[in-house]
Image (cartoon, rainbow over all chains, first blue to last red; front, side, top):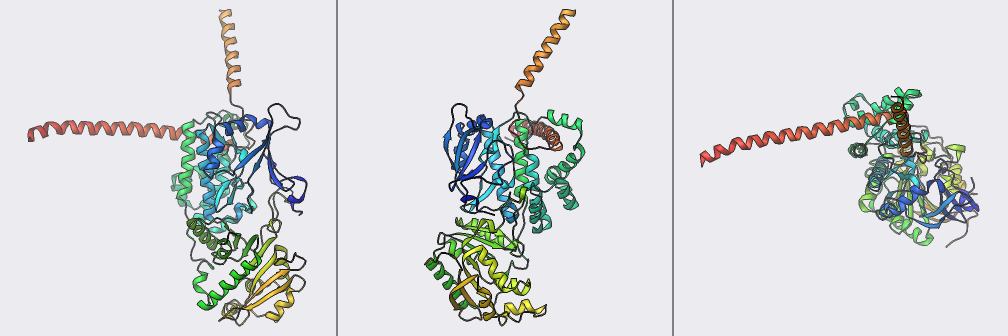
Length: 473
Length: 81
């Protein structure tokens, strides 16, 4: 897929459902149209100082107004906004438990703030939230409408599907339920969530209400004409709405998931690295970062982000990918605790990375579409792909080349105890898996800039430059 | 009688017209909110409202008991003194 930023003026492909306006790129800059039909809502958001408060509070992505019409316009556009650009777009199915939870709480807090200004969220999709400077931030500036007095919340269902259902399932059943939102792009259906939650959740009053009984109500009234009329006339007082939203907040806050005891959760406590080897590896990576000065870094198989931080602490925007939700969760919690601004931990399975999905297979971008990165770090990764997943070394090289312009790759030979552990339970069908085989596999994809054996270990670090990329110092 | 009837009818139509005009427009709410979700909120809202009233009544009841209790104590205290 062509990088949309290159086109002269092109709509962001995921931005089409809301008639109030849409996002588009023009000459490399990001803009958001505000339709004339949304004029009054937009003016209230702006003039009531709701936008100012939300932006100052770090809840809503900052924007500037670059054009405003006072009369009518031909093209139906009332205003044009220029929002701040988030350097890396991520999706709810790539988030760990706490990232989704923080996104949910952000949405609730914005709804409560909006109500103070006589406004209300008209949608509550998890895709409205991105992670920026180490914190969740709401990016859909046009999600706020004038509060329709005494009407039930139009976004209640969407909030329960996008946030509450997956959070409850992860908390109670395990992190695998985080993946379902890749299939259910509009959130988990409530009857599905209700059926997957254990019976004991029927005794938790809030989960009982917002998921189980809510699902029942949906099933009962679906497709019935008399129900449709009843719905049109149903009322919810403002106090009732406030209570509902605060109840959702309390429900989300009480959900918890502890990341431990999974396969890679305790990885670093269990490696075969001596302290000297560890330090040497740190030193080499730090030197590479100084030499290459990448604009951004993708750390593949980052675990809890120990090496990702070498880049992030130098002010380089770093995405720390790992297949293990527990490792990503630990990394994220640590990131929030330290208030780091240049790190973004995400869940990703490299053998099945995020694809392009949604409408026309363009609505949500694949991993590759969001790259390439300036620098890829693949430390203690290749042996997992080759020996556990049977991916040939040349295919690994080609894949890394597609994802990044430069790469730091750690080669772990069979003589290393970690590699031996991987081969324990299976037949060794890898005759070409050694340094020579690896260097041969790199041909056509990468040039080797440096080859550094790690002190006190069997491993080698390779600094690679992809073939055909700009030679930068 | 017929004239009164017509007046009532006219008032009814006027009222309906005004009521419908004043009904907030939901033109911008593009999302399908779900019939069951809207009705459920009305039910929940009613329950929450009822609970709030019950809680308020309970508190005022408890407050009255405590007030009675302290009034009973006072004469004893005076005797003690």
